[in-house]
Structure formats: structure tokens, C-alpha cells
Length: 505
Image (cartoon, rainbow, N blue to C red; front, side, top):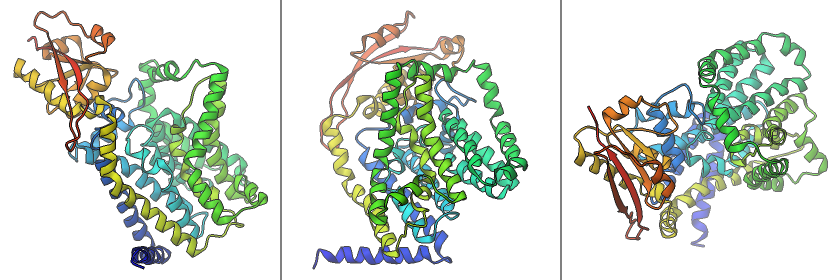
């Protein structure tokens, strides 16, 4: 009896929560408040659970990019760096604030998906579908690692929302916003070419495609998109398409068998990430073969257009990977789930009861609370297993580098190079806010010599140490060992090699 009391209270709370969302007068503010709490819960979880491991190198790399704002970078287009620069112009550069930025991406995305679903689903299905997405790791666990995949979540959702609206209404504003959002997606990651190609196929299955194609809407979308991305296109031409060369070197030139296996792994990974919501939805709907066929390829015109806009961006990468003999990763499918609730639940043969919506709301609320309770234990377990020193010890390394630098010269530290992950971490945490001498727009050699610099390597990395050898007469090679303990749990010692080349005025 005592054990059931908290669950009864939680069930009552879920019922009131559901009733507030169903009520048109309270619906929107309740969903917004719910998503805000969702963002905050997962932010606190990430701050605690990851406190023993430090910021992931993907995150510190983008901080380094943001110190050298550009229209593009060697690896990726610039949107993530622009966003990080803007964010940390307002907020302090701390782990909690970075995780807050990361969780705002799925939070905003879920809001856009809520708006998309209004065009296709009744209120119980909208609630059920939105709650289902919170069981997809892309909207919480993976989203906490802010990178170029994370920023695509709201950009793809916005592009999809405005584009589908423009197909139906041929409204000029929706068409322009679709083009701007599509350009933003390309500025986030070139993977977005599959979104644009997939959405371009959607009008072709529409019974009213002739009216749409003869209207001004598609031309407004194209013009708005090209105008938005034009500066980056000019940069690409000037840089001789460096990011594409990098992508081909890292992910291309695979055997046909290797590309095929990679494509199968991509599809299997997507199914794995979506497995829990699919199982929950199928257990609720109990569909037959006819209903499954209608889910995959609907009979109704608008649902079929939406299904095309979902399936095409998801499956076109498989065709592209095999045709170009490149490898793809299922993590890159992160932003493709904008239409997942619509595809899964919009069939008229599927009925979602108020009881079903209340139950899924209860589960969606329970997951982040349980993870928050478990977060201290997760942090300790990570510490016991030995977190990657390149991330966990970076703040301590930055402190040591600045201490050694300022023992050598009163000038601020301006440049850090050597091992890329170490350089990015020191750039992130160092009080002098230096720039990274890595795959970024490089300062002139005269500027580097005038300000001096630091090179970093892991002590055992012989190839890195060989590359960072410097013949300046006053260059110093210092070896140091760092240990990061966490809540009285001993860390693993790691040696670092630090070369300090002081300024030459």
C-alpha cells in the first residue's frame, strides 16, 4: 500500500497534465512548460553524469572554431560554430551552460514536431507521438554531445514544417522560410543534401503537384535558399571545396562490400534507435498487415506526401553510400525523425485512447527523473572505469599550460597546437582564450612568431612529439603528469609533453 501511493500520486499528476494539454485554452503553454522542464532535467542529468569525464572533444572543437569565425571550416560548414559563439557571448563557458545549449536543440525540435503533428493527428495522437520521441536517444542521451549533428535537429524540423505547409498552401512566407531553413540545414552539415533531395521528391507524389509546381512557391523557396547560402558557396569556391575533400578522405574510397555493409549498419542502427517507440506504438495499436502497409505507404494524399518527406531523407543516404562507395553512420540520421509520429500514427485505422496518452506521458516523465537520480552513480562508474584523459583532464591541463606559459612570459597565451583534441580542450578552458593551430583558418607565420605558442602531446605519443619538435633556441620542452581525482575516487595518471615557444617581438 505504501509502495503504491507514490505511483498513484504520479498517475494523478499525469492525468492532470494530460487534461491540461487536451484543453485548447491551456494546451500550448502546457506543452512549452513541459518541454522547458524536459530540457532542464536532461541538462542537470548531463551536468552531473558527465562531471567526471569533461566535455567531449566534439564540443571543445566547436568552441575552437568559434574563436575563428569563418564562412566555413575544413571539416564542416559554420552554423554550429556561429551558434556556439553567440551562446557563449551571453552565457559563461561552463559545462552546465554547454549542456543547456545542447538540450535546447531537441527541446526546440520537439516543439516544432508538436506544431507539425497538428496538421495530421488528433490531440491524443499528438500527445502520444510527442511523448514517444522522448524515448529516442537522439532527443536526450546523444543530444547532450553538442556537434554538427545536434544542430540539425531543429533545422531539419523547421525545413520540413515550412516546406510541407508551402506545398499545401503555396503561401509565399512559408515558401521563403522553407528555403531559409533548408539553407540553414546545409550550413549545419552537408548531410542535409539528403533532406533537400528527399523533400524535392515529396511534391511529385502529391495529387496537386501541378498547381504547386506552377505556383511561385517552389521558386521562392529556391531563391530564398540560394540567397541565404550564397556567401558560403563563394567560400566553398575560394577554398576549393576543402570540406568535400576531407569527407572523401575520411569516409570515401571504400570497397563496394564495405559500403554495402556500412549501409546495412546504418539501417540497423536507425531501427535500433527507434525500436522502443515502435514497440510501444505497435503494442498500443496492434496493427494487422493492411494497417502496416498503410503506415509505410499511405493511401491518403497528404499522408503520402508526408511519408515521402520522411522516407526519402532516411533512405537516400543508403543509395548514395553504395553508389559512391562511402561509409555512413546511423548517428547521422539524428535529425530525420521530425515526421516519425505522423508516419507512425496518422492512419485512421490506429486509435489512441486518452488512457494510452496518459500512460505514455507518465513514462516520458519518469525516464529523465530516473536518470537524474542515477546520474551521480553514473559519474562515479565512469571515473572507476577510467574516462578518456584527453577530455577528463583537459581543464587541469589548461591550468598547467597557462601556469607554465606565464612563468615564461607575461604576454597572454594566443596559440595552442599539437594533438588536436588536447589543443581544443586547452583552448576551451584557458582563461586567455587562445586560438587553436589545427584545422582552422591559420594566422600568418609572423603573427605566430610574434605572439609565441604552445604545442601539446600525450607523453607516449611518439609521432605527435616528433611533429611538434621546434628548433627555436628558447623553446622549452616540459613533461608533466596529471591526475584527476573525482569525489575521492582516484584517477589514472597521464603524462603530457608541453613545448613552450615564447614571443619574439
